[in-house]
Length: 425
Ligand code: GDP
Ligand code: IMO
Ligand code: MG
Image (cartoon, rainbow, N blue to C red; front, side, top):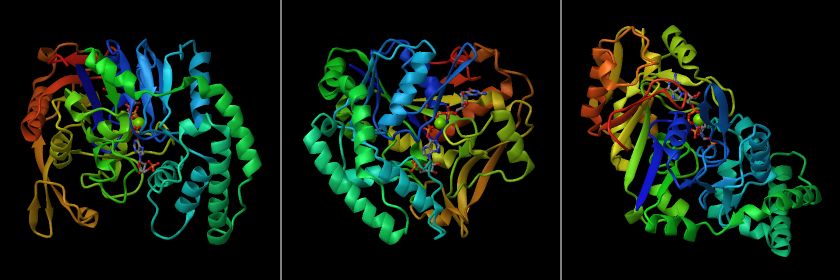
């Protein structure tokens, strides 16, 4: 049995897509278990770039790719993504959608946009893809699932009720035009025709594969600090992107998970609102953004950049039960001079080594840094750990010591081939 979960350990965009693609080479299944098209996972193969939003990042390999029960699926986005891959010569026959996954509807997207546009101080900086409103409907039991799309009478009934309810909100609370039920129905009928052959009960498939000792990779989107329970609430997403999310989001027992692989960028980035203790404002932050190409894969927004925060790193190691860490983008640190790692926070005179629940405290937190010597060499072509500059090795060692987890892979560039393998995963 080999169930490996790959998760983000910071605020997303750590390079999960790249790492999944590398590991998917030998995977029988790659399964997304939460989130939706708020994700933007980049895979680079021989200089050619693919950005995957809903499709698992293993899609360029032959293993079966599953959009699992815990995912929220916008069918139009899915069809566009499939078509764009097919145009580029990639195969998509191996993409399956769970019949239990929730369907993102136009009223979810509209509600997300309206809330974000309101000047009420509650802006989260979402991706405006309807993720939060769709998960809200799921929890309040008004959601429409993929299985409903295969039963037209049931779908029409649920859709009618939901459009009526949401139109009340649009017209009475936001004072905007209502949505047209007939148009939504017609559009979705078109989508259903094109995706219905992919909608299946994925749970027996995934469990059987695990029971037969096949390799199943569970692909996390978003990350630790965007987790609905443990992230910087309310500046989080609406799902559980941590390893625990796999059990509820893919229908798999925790006993079947063998490895928790945490992807950690060698520094920190964040998109959207919310506290960010090690944020680098000003020229230096701008420099890191430029060298690291830190612009959102989904929205194009500039990512906020900062030093590596290992209060976050320790928290992510603990909550995810990480067995392995993959460090990415360490090449970006070459030539930046002295480097800093945050090991604790000082808040109102008190030292915190773990993450406080009260997010507002984090706005006052002062990072306590350890300073390390940097290196100047270009490391993007290095293939062996021994060949890395001494100071780079020291930086990696210090991360291992502080978070108490081994680093198994170091990624030194965006391409599939740019990796240093230290321990076998
Ligand atoms: P994800 O959401 O976690 O999959 O990450 P994104 O794809 O949103 O962002 C990561 C960005 O960094 C992408 O542009 C990747 O191509 C790039 N990337 C991944 N690993 C490395 C690396 O080791 N070095 C560099 N320079 N870029 C990387
Ligand atoms: P990947 O998988 C970075 C952030 C948004 C916002 C908050 C809530 O590429 O790492 P949402 O649209 O989910 O309701 O937005 O979460 N966010 C991400 N930030 N990477 C992502 O995904 C993200 N998905 C959501 O910017 O702050
Ligand atoms: Mg991303």
